[in-house]
Length: 137
Image (cartoon, rainbow, N blue to C red):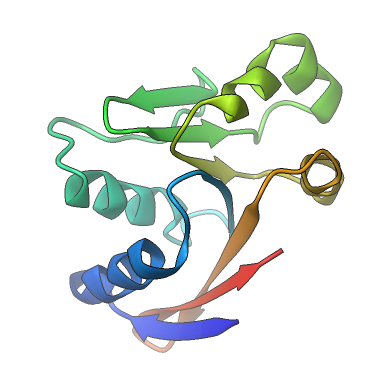
């Protein structure tokens, strides 16, 4: 487990740590309250990988795919059975990082049970910054 305290201007420290420690194929659960910075972290990761254009939370589309093996999911509105029925589970077989916002414990346990490598980044406010707790699940 690693804890990093950073402001938005210092997010490159978090991204650099993730790049150094997380393998090229992994599912990363982003955990935090509404407006905690989950999508902002994904934006910085995308920019670091050379993605141009607007990076937004896929709240209504459920998934955004980027050309650099970066996938972003927002599961706020759906439950696990709907996730499976929509065929999104198969997306995790694609090479790259899969950033999952609002994934629940049951989904994480299922993904672990079938052999996926899972990391969790928990984001919480900390004074005028954010605390990022990064751990392998």
